[in-house]
Length: 171
Image 1 (cartoon, rainbow, N blue to C red):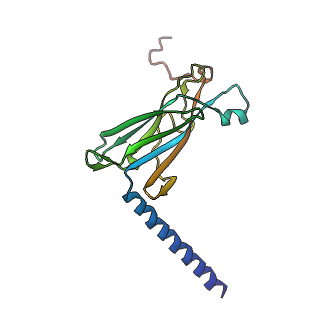
Image 2: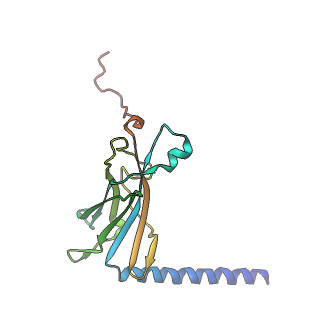
Image 3: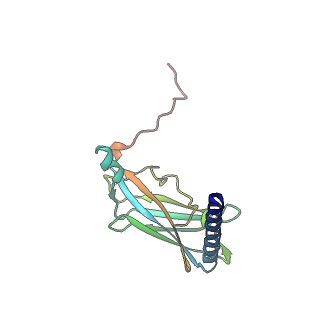
């Protein structure tokens, strides 16, 4: 009897998940724009771990999204600057030149920081190399949103220089 109950609960949960998946796919059909949002923070390496990981918002940081077509050519590029809270919201049209832009083919990355004390891009959160979102954070009645980051800048004093072996070692 207990096994029957467990099987019934699992079957009901699977049915609900499948119905939710159908609803989510339907939500993509009427979407005209896709939102990519997130936050940009400044990490201060001179602080302790708790302060370092939290960071402070960077106002006016530039973040960009670039979307590619099926041939890997850029079909859309747009940028936004962060507000007082370090938040951004990039809006991309779902159709460019009559063709659908797949949200998964877009990359969101850091571009620049106006703060001279915190203007070195880091890959903590993927901001330097860019992030390709995979799962929407919101799918609801024509709204499709992907949340990325947070992305981080750090101060020039925290930047680690790239070290590579010298090719011309004459010693």
